[in-house]
Image (tube, rainbow, N blue to C red; front, top):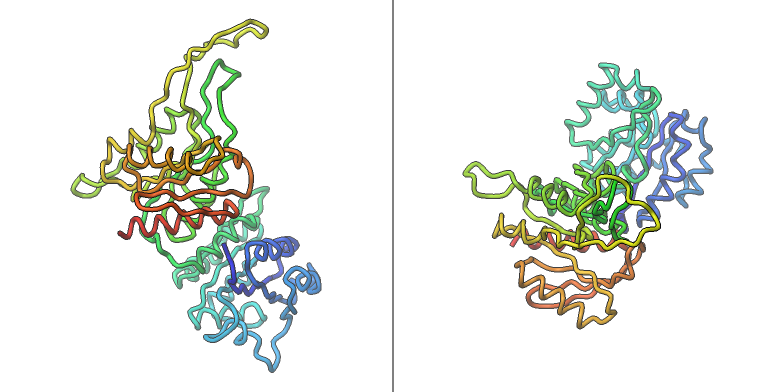
Length: 394
C-alpha cells in the first residue's frame, strides 16, 4: 500500500510517542521508507535510538547547517509525505501560526510551502482537544489541505488513532485519486441464517478481501459504503448485517439514491465480495432441544446480484466466485457463467481454500480475457480498485 513511499515521521512530546516505534514498523511493513524527526520534548519520552532502530535511518533531533528540514521536506526534498504522529496541541497551534521553533514545526512549515502532502495524527487530553483555540487551529490547518486522522476519544483523552488508520491516511495522501468523487458499495464477510435464537448457518469467509477492497477504494479517493458482518471501519461508512436478505436490502438501500433527474443510482459501482448464504431456513422461535434428530428444510435466498441488476440495469457490478474444484478451467467457466448471466464488469474467481488466509491467488475474468493474480489480500484489494477505476472511467 505504501511501496516505495518516503515518509518523514515527525514526533512531538505526547505520551503517545511511545507508540511511534510500532507505527514506524507498520509503515515499513507496508513498503514505506521512513526517516524520523523529533522535538526535544519527544526525546524525553522515547530515546532517538528507538526511532532510529524502528526506521533504520538516522533521526533528526536538531537543525544544523545541513538544513535538514529542506533536505527532507523542501521542493526537491527526500519525503513524499510529512506525517506528524503524535502531534500535540502545542505543535498544531504552532503550525497554524507558522511558528518554527522545533525540527518538527520547521519541517511542517517547509512542507506546506513546498506543497508536500501533510498528515497529522493529534494526541492530547480531551479538554485540550476541545479548546476553542485548538479546534480553530485544526480547522485552519485543514483548510490548507492537510489531512487529520481523528483521535479516539477514550477515558477523557483524545488518544492517537490506530496504526491502521494512520497508515491508511498516509496512503490516501500519497496515492493518485483515481476514484475521487466516486461512491463504491462493497460487501464483505460471511452472512448467517438463523436456525433458532442461538444457532446459525454460516460459512468460513473472513471478510479480509472485501475490507481490503473497501480500504483500497478509500485510498484512491472514493467514498465507500461497506456492508458487512462486523463493527465500525475507519475508512468507510458501515452497515452491519447478518442474513443474506439483510445484506441484499442494505446494498439496494446504499445504491438507492438518485441524481437530480431521478434516473441514476447514488453508487458508481457495487463490489459483491461477501460470501452470501445460498440457503436459509425458517427459524424456530425457541432454542431447539439438543440430541434430537432434525431435518432442516433449506430454501434459496434472494440473489443480491440479480436484485441489484434488476433495479439498476446499467450499474457496474464486480462479482466474486469461489470454487472448490482446484481446476482453473472450471473456475473460469463458473465465473463466465455469472459474468454473462448478470452482465458484470468482471469477476474475481478463486479457490475456496484461501478463505481466512492473508495470501491469495485469484483469476480476473472479464468478457475478453483472464488475468492471474497472486499475492496478499491487501495487494489484491489494490488491484481490484485499479480495475474499478478503469471501469468507471470508461
